[in-house]
Length: 68
Image (tube, rainbow, N blue to C red; front, side, top):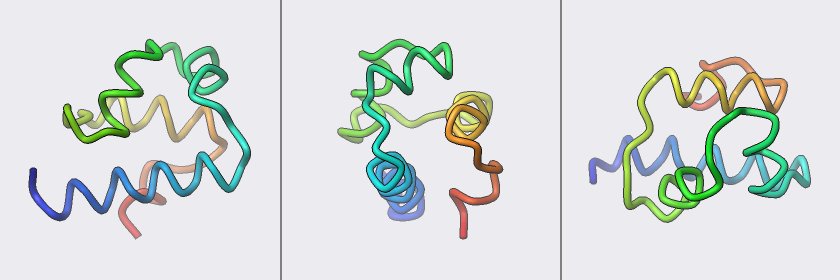
């Protein structure tokens, strides 16, 4: 996996943990399955932009926040 992709995923995890949002809650809020979120956070799959956008929206973030 590309280091830039890993950085985006690490940022996503950091935001989720800092906001005290569980994977179960993020799944419910974003419409993305728990298993898919788990695979993203364990870096077994690469999220596409649409998925990242849904995750950002569910956490009251903007898509660009994952890339800063």
